[in-house]
Length: 261
Image (cartoon, rainbow, N blue to C red):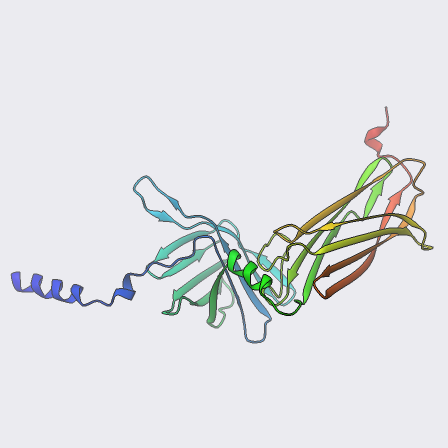
């Protein structure tokens, strides 16, 4: 019996230190794409939580798996650290990330009851590191501009417009809720005009640290004619620019809820 104990202690002493490394994913964003870039996995982690017994619980703030034009959100997930690796398990996907010596991860993703994806080598990139990459770029980044707006607005209501700006090199398939690759201090210029080109108003501003900007316009009864209007969005950052235009509709009527019975 004593001989067995000695052997176990001897073996434990010579286990490589790397086996006991803990995966560092706190406040990190991990992004991976396949070689053809048709599959993109994005995981955003927050601060770790601890139980009363001081057991560490990683927190996945948001996650998504993009397969072509299809986006699957990773929700109601459970994350567990296993040495220098971690596992994420939700209702529709299982992700196993094995830590590598250089700090990267090798990931296997499985759709529950569906397809297994080939392993993808990932690099851990924190939001702070991503911001530094943007600021240090000697050339202007290629931008991706996402826009959300009210497609129909009644009289005496507010037309809302939201914009997020991303660096395509850092986040090639961004979602509106994400912050990875967000471009801070991009110039936003908006012109609102009618179908024949007459300008109704314009407003401008700069994106914040999340790459976000929002604006609004009050559609006043009897002063703003009903009909289709054109929204021109011009985004500029360093020497890069992105121009888009689209339509919205102002209804020459007040909401039914505003009228008395």
